[in-house]
Length: 298
Image 1 (cartoon, rainbow, N blue to C red):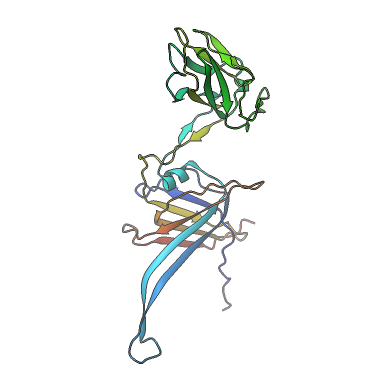
Image 2 (tube, rainbow, N blue to C red):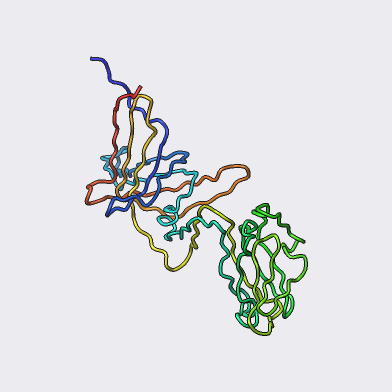
């Protein structure tokens, strides 16, 4: 009888994470992967003593099992499992979104009576909304200047520009009048004055976050005291080979922490995370390896 065909593994196909209690996936599998490495290392403990130059015996000590994965996409569940916080997923916004304006330094800029009562989109100009965080700074008791933290989205709708190196987007101070709207031309939003006599404190600031018209978004604040971590399962597959062979690895009890997010000039972001695998009493093991011979569909 001739030797059987070798059992190679070619490339990588996907990685999914699942809840250890229900086996349900946390979200869409990662498909844009650069590679993975399931590394197993084990201490070898030698018995030495007396005048012998050699070991009397060697026994196996602690074994460590780690799965390192290099990925090129960032699904929401990575933040949930590795940074402890679920992102807020927003539905498509056909008219964009102007967030709630809030005082940042001082308390006079946003005031329903004596300051800015609200910041909202200009009806009919939603196509001018540009992604960004905008800072409103009080220039006088009744006027404000507006700054942006980036020009990333300034080409959306009417072109936006910085007027100087302070990153201001208003060429002159904008007047806030009682009950009146002040349009921020080209940026799609307006400031509405409070109901009483306007009287703000010079130097106070407020911020408002804006999203343009979009088909969906997500956001998460990392580092709060409400973070919750848990262990999870990982299900990884190799690429289906031309003769139908397939490989799967099911790690029953994985732990991970930290999520690198890098941005490099003219390159796709790529992060590497190492997960530690632990024993799972229900499955009585660390992971299950499966190699399916399959048959070619050709």
